[in-house]
Image (cartoon, rainbow, N blue to C red):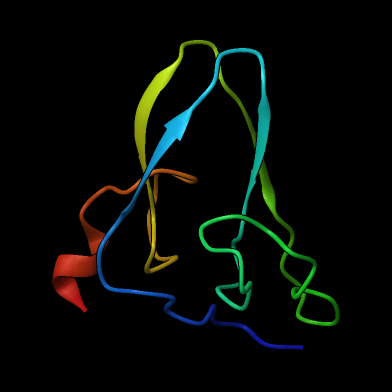
Length: 80
């Protein structure tokens, strides 16, 4: 078990999202399917963050995993 997530990248992941779909953001940073969960969090103490899309468009998902606005980028990567 670990206390800190892995930094997947020090910038956000821009993703085109679709209204009505659920997305599961990787909180541990270990997924090979960034920014989304692939189950790599097993035995880490982290869980993916479910987000339901209300409106089709582009969203910027956090890549550094340090955001206070999970699952979206809040600029925390600029302090790393």
